[in-house]
Amino acid sequence: MGRFLGYWSSGKFSMTYSRLLASVILLVTVNARAQTSPLAQIRQSGTVRQLFIDNKPFLMLAGELHNSSASSVEYMKPIWDKLAALHLNTVIGTVSWELIEPAEGKFDFSLVDAQIRNAQERHMKLVLIWFATWKNAGSSYVPRWVKADRKRFPPMLLKLRLGGGMGSMLATYMEQQGTSPLSPFPAETLRADAAAFRALMRHLREVDLGHTVIMMQVENEAGSLGDSRDRSAAAEDAWAKPVPADLMNYLARNKTALLPELQDVWKRNGFKPNGTWPEVFGTDEWADEVFMAYHIGRFMSEVAKAGKAELNIPMYANAWLGPQPGQDLPGKYPSGGPVARVMDVYRAAVPSLDLIAPDIYVPDFKGTCALYARSGNPLFIPEARDQVGNLFWALGRHAAWGWSPFGIEDLKPDGQVAQAYKLLAEMLPSLPEWQAAGKVSAILTVDGEKPEPVSLGGYKITLPKGRTPGSAQLSASAAGAELPGNVSLESRAMPNDTRPFALVVNTAPDEFLFIGANGDPVFAVDSPGPARVAIAVKDEGRFEKGKWVPGQRINGDELFQPGLPSTNIGMLMVRLIRFE
Image (tube, rainbow, N blue to C red; front, side, top):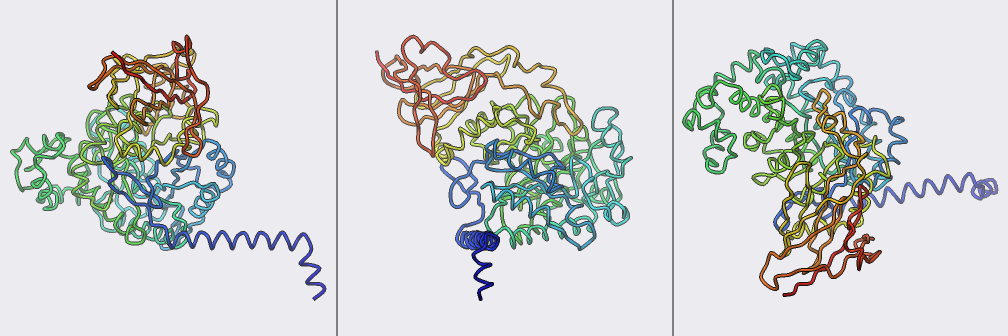
């Protein structure tokens, strides 16, 4: 007993006991919370559909890791603290099929567990990407036992007939490397993918008791490059058969509400109610795209369905954009992927997916957001350049769930993204509530674009450009440069965004909050009452735990100075008066 008491009183035992006690307390707390808190859910909230975590609307201040970062626990060790310094509340990580199932039926989830553990320690949430059958229109992340058995897991048969361009180049490279996209038609490929995904989701249900993983991406930028459709024997057999009834029934039920791109393809042959694929849709690339979208969608649907049977959390598919400049036809961008023009096909084919998410690297960020926010699709942007003005546009104009720069670990903790996330984090959960109430908008003036006023709270609001350092301007050549896979050379650690931009919130009658940079708000009357308006109060400031903390009062002759800072992200609270 004396030896035991002596050991008990020693620092070594006390430290060991303290650690054990802390671990037990943490485990009990997580288990108790898991028993009472619901899974992540999608709900209608006011005028918008929102993601709810623990029964509260949740806005993801997110960043996506490089594709290979999460493949090493050691590599990720210093990165996790950097992600915290960037003020992320959500990390988009990866799960590679080849790493979790190196031998068929033998699973290793240690890399998944490490991501969950590190995110929990920093009070972050996770969105996980299932890199499986398709990754960037190829199959490079499938296990070796899948790559080696082409009879059981055959690739698409593609005729590289488009000639030149990045699509043909990448398709040729993947064929040489043995990573051509697997065909969606063979049952064995679907069975193996769905079984692995189901095992992953079962593991998450058993170990992620704190619901750290809030959403799953199923596959990644699926489709065929270099040709507009699979021409394997199984694909040709499906092409010659009648269009499946579930798609034709969907088209008939929603004929007047279909997105115009699909309606135009169906219309060309007279809106036929049935027939083979060429009889209903034709024989060109646009018909091929509908065919591929349906069959890739059906594949994804079965994978997602298998996963949701174990853990029913929101799931989505992401899109390599198309058509886009330089990639104007299916096959020049991945044909059959979940692009905006075939969202209706995915709705018919993939009822187990909750939304379609665009990866936006093209210059037309505004137009792309509008395409993917149609017909009730919630906007979530899992990959983007780190142009922070685009973040505010997505949040303000489309009530986006989140915007996520790719290669997040490359960004600087003192850069614009970190500044924006730090300010926004203190406003949660008020911001999602304001979005639901229709009190939020945004201003973003792109170079060469005529500024358009925002109508909000009875006023028309503009944001004239303030003084910005010329050295920080983004050159047009840098903005347009791209890497294979449609990733911009400047998608990581871009120069500061010098465009005028702001998130605008109508916090009370005649009161507006601005978060942004490079401009000063100007108001005009847009509602009945006195015809003239002036700024009565302009305060710099910040939010702390959801409460506004005013800083410097900008008054007198300083009212003529730019209100939002140049390049750095700032906040203004403006109160107006109206008079005759």
